[in-house]
Image 1 (cartoon, helix red, strand yellow):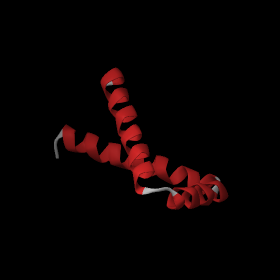
Image 2 (cartoon, helix red, strand yellow):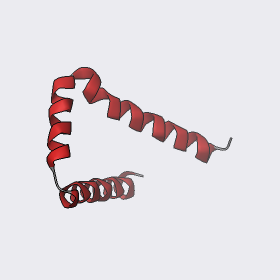
Image 3 (cartoon, helix red, strand yellow):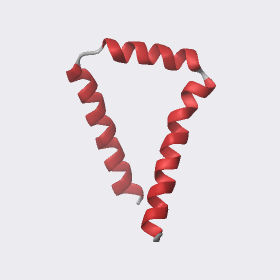
Image 4 (tube, one colour):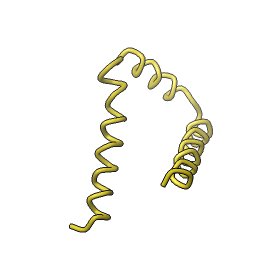
Length: 64
């Protein structure tokens, strides 16, 4: 495997670690946030997803 694939695997691993922190450390807060998310409309969820992607792209362009 080349360095690009190794970086991609490391990135996915880091995402999984970060995603798992909240339910591991404070599961009651994670459950409450998930309940709120389920109650939102599709448009609200899409907007949150769009904002997350834009912040991620901004961070990549600024720091990478």
